[in-house]
Length: 201
Image (cartoon, rainbow, N blue to C red; front, side):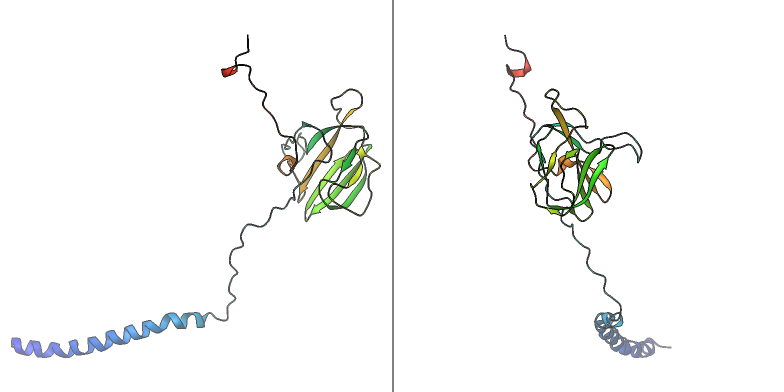
């Protein structure tokens, strides 16, 4: 076969390649528009939720005193620890609600009286020991809920010194109340007598 014959037999192949390429591009242009229609019946998942508001509301100090014992997370469900904080206060001092809440418990625990308030969904604040506590109903923030009672860890200030215990639970898990107290006493550093911390002459 001559070279001219070879060129003649290849020309028909070049003629149908161009229309085929145009057909493929045309079909491909319609595929993205048809794909959503194929899954239109399926439910569209909601967008991921952003971070929600804090679970524990801001809490006020129930009494005006120094924190004499801090929170100590337990080592396991039955391990030792301190499930709240102790605040120094004299027996008989008025105890105020750290936040608005509903009384969900008021009664004796190990010989002393305690009160628990539901201050947010799943968030319970417990205070005690108390004298003359509220026993039911809803309380406003900073409203009196009782008076400091004896029987807890002795506080500074002589025989009349006592402590009020404040505990916070979130979904049954105890957390450190200090992280949520908005008016807790702040630590202050004593000034140094001389630069470098050396005692003065």
